[in-house]
Image (cartoon, rainbow over all chains, first blue to last red; front, side):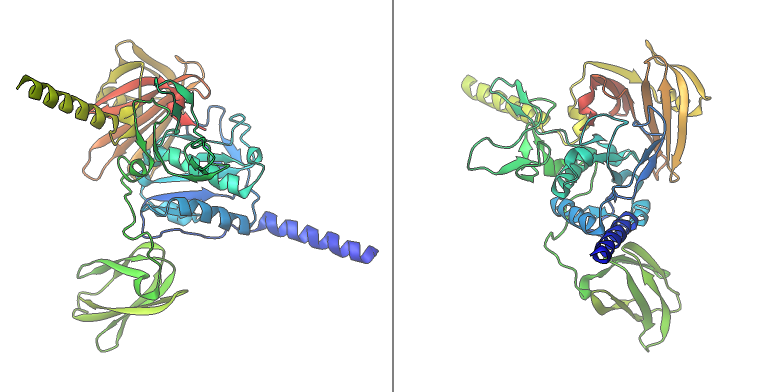
Length: 314
Length: 141
């Protein structure tokens, strides 16, 4: 019995250690997009932003397991699948993203430096260019993955310029700043920019907290000015080997490609002579080519979705 | 004829009201209580200033404070975080962005967390203004 208990204690200890030191899985929701939202689960040091009234902030790691992170990423990504926007957990993808089309969301247990809240963000900071982060404080969300994902989506909405969706009376006086959705028994929907925790939450057209005279179309605001991220060309497009790599532009000396993931590539001339080879990273890539290798070339790539090739007139 | 004119002018008025209520840039919609125009030179002088700042940004709008942080993001953005003595506890976060054509833009906020009001730098028709607005429109939970 004692041996059995010892086994349980050791395996529990190992499980906790694995969770604590588990690496965040590298996830991307839509690699062709330049606009990027980086989900930070491993802790962060923040300085030089509007949050630093009291000096540097050292945010503790989220402590979430890889499985929880994957699930939270999926929930958030689903809310943004309409848009030309990549939700990533990869810091390298964030670093490569345009300064004026990126933000990062820090998931940390508590926000004692700020006060009691489930999260906070600066409205419109996606386009500021100075890496001001938004925050999700997990303890007030009971560390519930659904609540964490909903709170993160809400904060991302703020960074993209959205105000709260509010409720007003017929005279235009505010009844509540955060709309909980329609108050009838047939509706189970709530605005993501209201209270998104207890009903199916989605983007809405409604009156924002700035006043009953305004209308905030959440999706148009996210896609349009000043974010200029737009919508995905085909929201239902699935990645197959054939469309995993797209050629954006070709000049005599280089090829510009958009890759949906990590692929090895090889470039041949028409006689089968290998001209160059290497790795394609998710997002934008350039391959240097020789001006001597003109004519018909063949680009071949292979990765987790399989292999494919494409002829190129060069 | 007069009735037709009245209907047409009412329609135009209603259309313009509807359009103005649905402007695309959300910052253009922010209600504000005060607006101070700041010249590009005044904004630029912040980025050339020494650590201790004492500048008139506009008539009646003097900024005194200390640079807490100066950071460069990429090759095109410089950000300053200034602790503002003239608004105790307030922080001015201001960034200067130079695009590929060499045009310079500024974004900025003067806030103290949990205060009711804050200032936001907005650009309209190539003029910059600090607008005073409710802070819940600038920082939200």
